Length: 195
Figure (cartoon, rainbow, N blue to C red):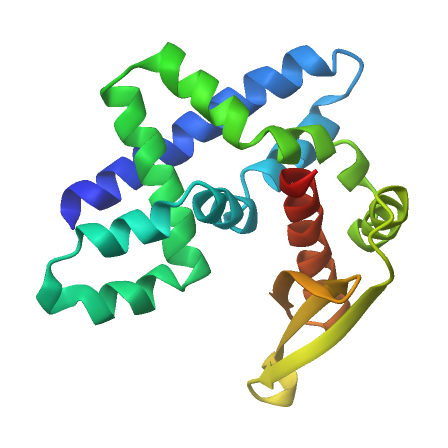
């Protein structure tokens, strides 16, 4: 467990560096604050979770688990934070093993849709999703609040977004709006991966 967390720590930094360099070169006219916000969106836990899922990392983790721990591995693999940690630890392992060049190519390929969407996601994620769904002719966008937890002064809402009837994102936040925004951000990444 200790080495896994260390690889996650390294991978988080490596991911930030690779994405920072790419955004820096792609957008020479953008100010530091804009680049920072773009990077935050690309390297978010939500995006890392989606990348891990599309790369098959949760399935690989379950397959590698000893039979006695298989049900626990299945439950863990279903958790977005664990999927995000898997992505970051694989990036860290790649940096140590195959090296900087191979890891950079793999990260830029795996995170391409999030990097491409970063400038448009500087705007309201819900508006950007509406435009992207219309552009791709995917049908209407609908949000549903799926849960509320905590006392009134510390409430956390969860939401999902359906595009053309398909669930493409989930989010949580301290307001319904924040939960929907996070779900929209995740759906934008998913739409980019499916395009």
